[in-house]
Structures are given as C-alpha cells and as structure tokens.
Length: 239
Image (cartoon, rainbow, N blue to C red):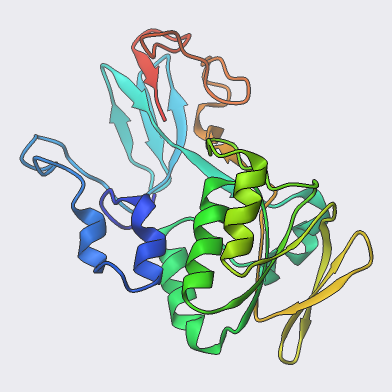
C-alpha cells in the first residue's frame, strides 16, 4: 500500500542520519521486478482475500485473480489503549514516509521521548543519538529487553546508556500533552518529561486484517506449516 517499490527498511535510520542516499534503499531486488515479469502495483491496499473465488480485492475497486497466493503483509506498530487518545501527538517511525517527515522536523528537534521494545526502537535510539539529540527512553521493566536482539538485557542497557540515552525504568507513558514549545509526557509513576517529539508504540502486530473471514487460520499471525502453506490450498504466507 506504500507508494514506493520495495525498499530496504533496515537502512531507514541511515537515511535519517544522511549516511546513505535515498536511492540506496531501493537497491534490493536483482533482477528488477519488471525484468522478472512481476507487475508492481503501489499505493493501494488489499482489503479482502476471497479464497473461494481465488480473488484479491483492492481498495480502488480492482479485483485480482490468482492461482497461487503469497501473503507477506508484514506487521505494524500499535499504540496501546492508554495512549490512543493521544495518537495525534505520537510520531510514527516505521515507513519511508515516516522517516522523511521526521527528517524535515530534525532542525527543530532537540529533545525526544521514546518508549517501545522493538528492533526499530533500538535503531531509532541509535539514530537520534548520532544526530546529537537528547533522548529519554521509558521502559516498563528494570532492564531493556528487545525481542530478536541476541544481546543480553544488561549488554543492551550498557549499549544504550553509552549512546547518552537516559533510561527511565519500571515506568510507562500514560499521557501526552501538547505544549507551546512541544510536548509534555507524564508517566504512571508521576514523572514528567518534555520533548519536541514523542515516540510511544507498545507492540508490533501482524497486518492480517485482509485475511480475516477468508478461512485462512490465524492466531497471533497467519499459521503455516514448514513449507509455508496456510490452512487454505494454494495460499502461502511469509514474513
């Protein structure tokens, strides 16, 4: 649904820090999709998969028929219920557009307040620190614990503190108020922090809305076997 061809999301923080050119993000596919016979459609969301008729329904009204279907929709950052009323005050950091918007704001950003426990949170902390920003990182537990990162919590703690990041432990953000000069964050423990930008995502959840009601079995994500078959014939899932 993004308006761009596939790009390397791992380089987004490097782009934020001006360490790679934008075109470098798109040097991911060899041979080019067009040369491989792939018809690429960008900027359109898949609304529904009809496994009975073997059709994919798009938000622009188009229907695409398939013989075999691969669902590789990835996941998205999710704001917790407590912070949903303040969603307009919370900055996204996941897509290329998110990073480009943040890049435009960088000259006026001195202080950032961050919470979340995803790999992208770690790269965000690293990027903001490399840019010389003052960063406060609020975590729920006594130690930083980011899934899919092999380092121990104590090693992660030390690495993040060595970046100059202030870690606020055993706490969580509960309100975000807009002020004249930025935002004021209040935590469950009654602490208050000021920031020019706030990042606060509780989790990343699989983007599987389009397969709801299709007969494809899901749990926390789409269920597959060792060969990536889903519960429906001719439908596969990955990512």
